Length: 598
Image (tube, rainbow, N blue to C red; front, side):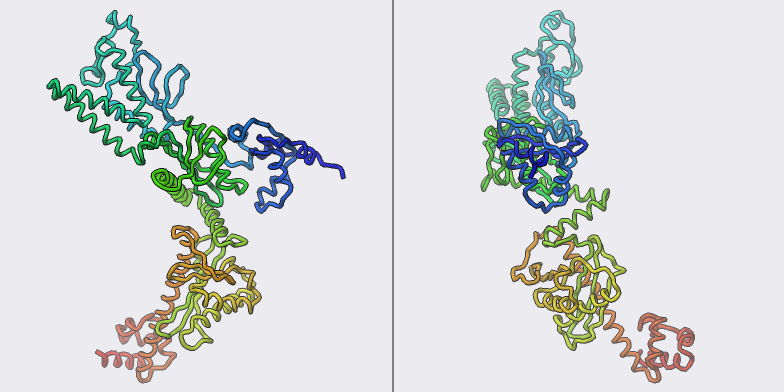
């Protein structure tokens, strides 16, 4: 059998690391991927059935395959990242980020200025960053300004011009913010010692500056210059205070990048912390939209390359929650305990907080995306075959065995649909029998829906454990619906979720959105059922009380309740008001009855 053009392309791929690109029939790039073994990776797309619908659609559209062979996996990672940003293929995760990040610049000049900027100019100047917010930059610059007087003017301070007396001291000198190198009042050597100390502070190393200040303070004190010594003491306190706030782990942890990831069905959130001398000098969280059901490992590897490029990180060691492939030049460490584990957990918390903040924003700005995400998450968490867009929850209510009732509440797209709520008086069960009551109500509910050809839910939730769940299953069996509708029971004590034919309950994370939706359903069913039960008992008591009025029958009681709504209003009604509803004779009897009770 003659091979197709695609099969020929696949068969000629090398067994080498590289980057592959898929194109459609119009020559438009669909997808870019990396591989340790190009032939093996590309072949896997065509040799197996894919669970993900987007992957199946991608494979159908592939018309041409191109590839680039590289020397190592690291090169493949870098090339893949660059291609994704350049071409933004439809089926790749999105790495778009147009933010212009701020830097701290130490200008390439004789007496360097230190200032914030968003533009990098290749003139030999040093740039530290980028930082994720200007607030961080300003905090650092305020600290530096309080420790080391620096010039802010942009004059050309060449020695010839200074000797010629071209410049005069300005206000900055008089208020102590500058030591006037423009008039030779500060040597170039002394100024550059300050610049070197600033470099170390920006890198997170406070040790050198503290040692330098302590030596100077001691020298001033020995020479009885107590005011100068006090000034340096204040600077030491400022620096130590800043250091104590910024140092969050062992200061020996230096020049390390920390990465963690949390994800849901649609997005991955990768947090990055850069550690220098135990301090976090940079933090950033990258949101990545999934396209082909990518794993956390795939997303994390891609994000690490992107973030390190974006922030120009030169760290040779990274901490991650699981093994990733970063090539030979980067040491990958998966911390298990101690300070290293603590900093990784901090990164995870940052990723989770970022994710929750995005959820809150999306809930306001894009309700549809919020609904879609929750439905996809519930489908995954509860191992469902389809998204539970329509959920129904049942709860029984009977207090001391009296007036047994049940409630059914309905959620659509994760929100209450109150017009679809239903309440039931238990008809076939005598006494407090939760199991039999549940069986009756579930049978009545879905028999009615089938007869009326109404849409059935994708998920049924039963308030109770295995017993109530099995009772509900009996009714579904009778109606031929078992296996056609997903059903789960929730036990109150430990929030255990029970599935049919599974003796081991499922425990969801207490902060899980899926569990919160189920709890909301259960609580709403309980509230609705209890309210109905109380009203029923109240009406029963009222009916019993009014039946004791001589000469008053059931029809009269119903007429009064319809009009006045409660016993209290009937008791307080005037003769005229009662007579308009039930006539003069009966009104007199009601008035006489309530007078006799006073």
